[in-house]
Length: 413
Image 1 (tube, rainbow, N blue to C red):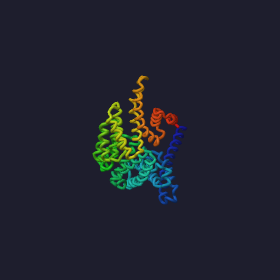
Image 2: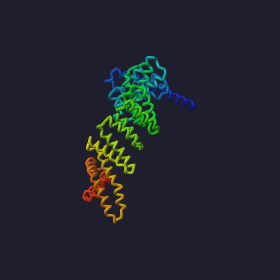
Image 3: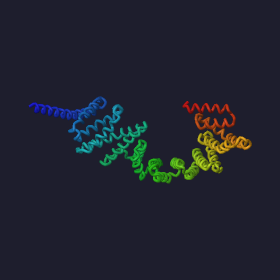
Image 4: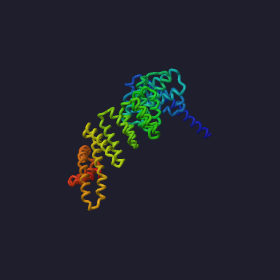
């Protein structure tokens, strides 16, 4: 008998719980209706509706109904369009979208389906605003999710012959581009690849050079030919774009393919003859070739110096060219100093001749390092060079000064 009583009590509690959760769905719907009658006067009613719908969601009987998800979508849609509640519940638009999506997967009456589609139109705007805010905050994973949601809303509406979101083709392609771009920035490489590649057949492929640059970056480490192929494709469409050219050149430089880097930079200078960075980069190509060849080819040396000086003609305080010129001259003394150290003490005449040659080069290098020091006084390599040059030239006071500064920088001061 006791077992029967316990079973009846348990059944009673279950029925009561189901009834309560069903009642919560009605409460939520009623509170939503009250809010919509006067959104300003009945502002608290939308919170009551949200709290009731969350309780109602605990019932499987409710969640099996399309009208439940429609009601939840409508509640969170209202929250997402209210400026105060949007700040308090920043995920409201996404919760509304998820609810509408589930509603569409269930049996709905025609008017209910239309209500779902109208709701999706509404939540699209706060979803878009959220995406912009996430990009500004550099929260790229959230931005990617928001933009993906916006595109999915667009697709759902189009599939149901509903218009109103991203109907301008140019605006749509911009959103598609930024969806792929935020996927790239958030580390979703495969999504970024498919997103960018899907745009190659669209109008934006003739308007956005970064499309090819991003595909290059996505592929070059795993498939060099494919990555460089995208850069080549981009340069054919945008022959005057410096970013594509410089990225290709830098890749060749980083991988020791100096001849190819030189060819690209020569073409870049022809297109932009007053770009100091191009001259510095080309000077560095010849500089590296000179260093790799054992510093015996004076033609390479002269070319490097010439291009560095061209950069300084455009900007006399361009640190890259100033420092590199000083460093080239400093390094030119390396074989001379090696010979000096190898001479016997009795070879004073030969030593003095080599010292004079070294000092002449140091005198030429010194102004460049002093200029570099004036631009960036805490650069370790500049301080090392100044310390050694002034010591070699018997300026012990200056050498001591640079030595102290070097030690301070190396100590983190």
